[in-house]
Image (cartoon, rainbow, N blue to C red):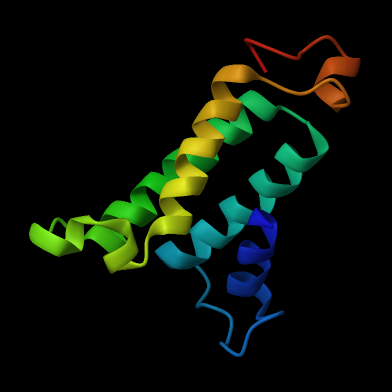
Length: 115
């Protein structure tokens, strides 16, 4: 699901919106979403991919949803940042936990730690 958000930004698929402009911050976010989403799903370099994805979603939440506003805007349900915040914490968990038992990382003995 995470990689689909990258496809939407980069290629304009599964959305009514046009692809974002090449080289912009949103374009770079789309590249990270697509690449890390596929890597995490396959279990390839899971620790590093999940750490990068977590940071990307933390930046997305702070910069595009919360916007450093106090009051009700701090609440994810109000600023529509639930998905960014959820992805950020979920990927942080994956980064700490490592790859699963069916991952490529596990097959090559890289299931935890150095990724």
